[in-house]
Image (cartoon, rainbow, N blue to C red; front, side, top):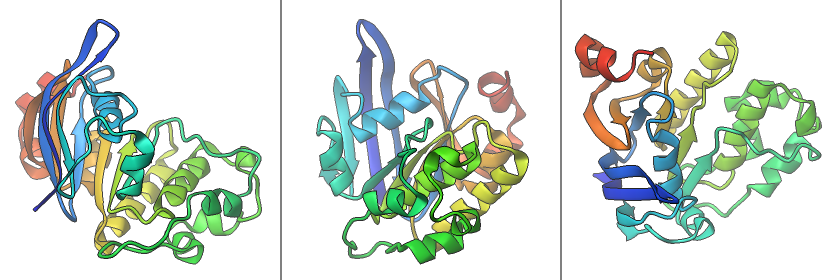
Length: 235
């Protein structure tokens, strides 16, 4: 069953069309990687789903609710979590205070998160629960941003470039964390350029190029299709 369905989604920045009929689905309990080169439309797709870029036309359905055109806070209340690429933690607040900002009531049928459960998921954060966000490394801030989003007990999380700019050891920890989320039953849609990282964590891949979907298949199928990887993912 599809938890998220995107159909014929169009979006513009001013006069420039950036999404041209984007369509794909994310099954409940799966991890889907939205892939493509820089500027292909990955982040814009995520932002359009979340309401941060108003779609000019098209349909976005989340858990059966039509959400296209709704404001982001309403979409978040329905159970859609968003982790932006630029993290946006509160640098003056401690790790614990950042987590409390994200706290929401438990939702039926989805994992419920507590600080202790998140510290088990991200052991690095457990050692710095009283540290201000501004005194953390980029990788630690990325973990905190994901943890804060999970405190909202979402049914589906949108992750924008979770491995971008991180040290290899942190990328590995991030991959393990996403696999743990999947085992918990969480659904994940991630924007990703790193094929290795996407292969580690994802069930399916959707490739976008110039604002349109060019390929969709399992990660195993993409890994075996050198022609598609060369055409749409090689730098």
